[in-house]
Length: 246
Image (cartoon, rainbow, N blue to C red; front, side, top):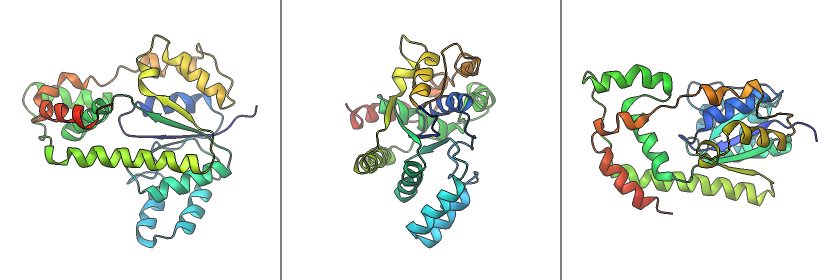
């Protein structure tokens, strides 16, 4: 089986950064900045241009040109218009990508993590190291959670994921569904599971591969340490548990 480049379709706060970093380290295909179509990122000119011209054929052609070297990509489906996800899937399918959908079983916790990141401005361990001490000593006061927007956030994320799955199904794509909890909260090591996923994409990898030490070195963000300092967060989580009931 020949190696395939990888497209990871996911939602924010789903463990996609470490997961993608590990797979990219194993892959012989080039890397590109995570979520490259987002604002001020590598391929943001494509999404910004599409916002002006709204031409799906031009969008697909521009994405196809950007993927000329088949870079591995992580794409958050709820951030960009569905047209960009559609074009990305079409180009990836044509170019023989191995497509992964990465989700989180506990959506309330995922969205709660997103709300904390937005309220504090800390989007990863480095940001937490910089921001959390200031929150704990009272020199920085996080913004309150806007409870009125919770339902819209949940519905928008569910809609984006549902549309993405429909696009994959309608194209007959044999995609790999990976769940956050099975990678990060399982009795099996994250490295063992990612190595198995890599092999399904044609990458020769074993759990003891030194390129998988990203999981051993990752200390997480420990958002729980400052959750009680964010106004409305407890109420937001209570509402999310209902909105995201499984």
